[in-house]
Length: 370
Image (cartoon, rainbow, N blue to C red):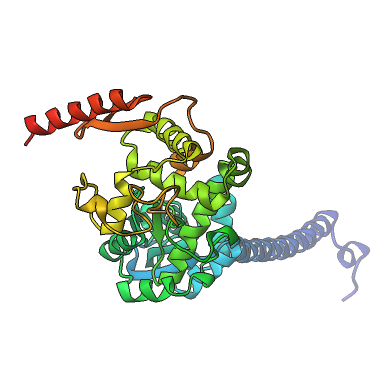
């Protein structure tokens, strides 16, 4: 069959249709590829976000905690040091979580050294809150009042702590290991400063006594004891003796300086101090009015019989007594007596006649209150 020119060439309409279908196929393929690329992008982005979240958010517990554990915070510890101990004890899930939580809380710098009781598996925020709460510290508090003798200090410590009397006595037998000032002459009496002490678990007798001596040294520096004693013409040790006498005699803070002045005036006069507190120390009695028999006891601490200061302190003076010992109130008093044993009211006198009148007032008070 002979083809005419018209039969051998496609029409223009058929050609355009084939052209459109070709481009559609190309565009469809491109769309599929783009979709696949976009899906891959979304998947990769999601995976990356997940990885970022895993690395940015440190592991942290969310439960209410379980069990009990103690953590020790040492002097000079950083947040990282504390965090390491917390993670090792399974208190927090990671050191990073605690460090980041601490960094976001300015109060974290106020964590005090000590032993703390915490629960295991708590959030970093909860662990930090516990460490910032003083009530969480595992401590034993013991208060040593002013005016106690060494023997009474031992009794107070053993009654309020787990430290035994034997361990305290053993430590007291080695005064050279307690850090006493050189002028203490290796005598402990008078240098166990009265205060409230916080004992960490396991605190030894020697550690506590050393802390008490250190606290005395601090008070001595605060009042300028050494230079103040020199200005008064006494040695630092004699100033501590005088302070212990003030602590044993004065009943009210306003009388400390006056009692100190009486002591200095009588020392200057060269007469016996005649202090009941020293007699009680010699006899081992408490704060009672000595009898005539007590005042006749043969002891270097009996200031009714022995002139001048006793050979050593009779108790542990507080800061007010130390200050009064080197800064007595100006006055000419030579005598004093407490005329009301309930209120501590004390009267001072220049003459012996006035003193006897004050003593009679005390006698009348005692008759009324027998």
